[in-house]
Length: 146
Image 1 (cartoon, rainbow, N blue to C red):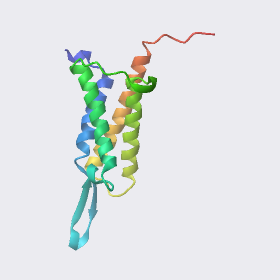
Image 2 (cartoon, rainbow, N blue to C red):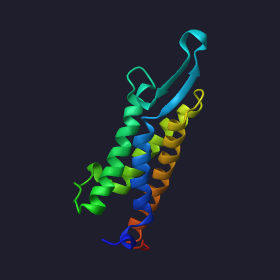
Image 3 (cartoon, one colour):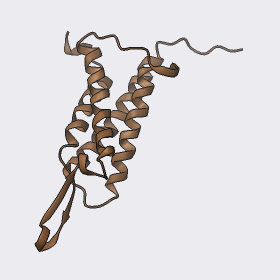
Image 4 (cartoon, rainbow, N blue to C red):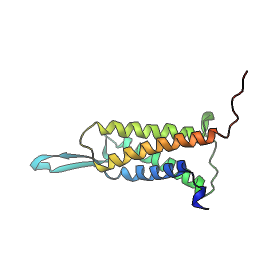
């Protein structure tokens, strides 16, 4: 497979998924605990009581990035999405969810490098999934008059 065969939206989804997954392992927050505790930091897996929001972001990065990579490089046929959605529409919904989670954490406190990387990766995935949806819609038939 030549690199010319890869669409920009595919590169954005794969790269964004990888960076989002790796960003959850880096520091999302850092807090000065004073003399007694020292500097405290939390990564995406320690964001809330059970780390569920960080795990959701990591899973979204893995699902979108891994699924698009498997479809592009492994010639894997993905199953039909549920409820009549296309794969691009599911990518839009999942990447928007990751973007809302990470942008919401930006306003929470002192932000670390992992959260900034995850936020940028989620936004790149939103843009890539919208581009993917627009590329797929050009193959459809144009609307007709009644």
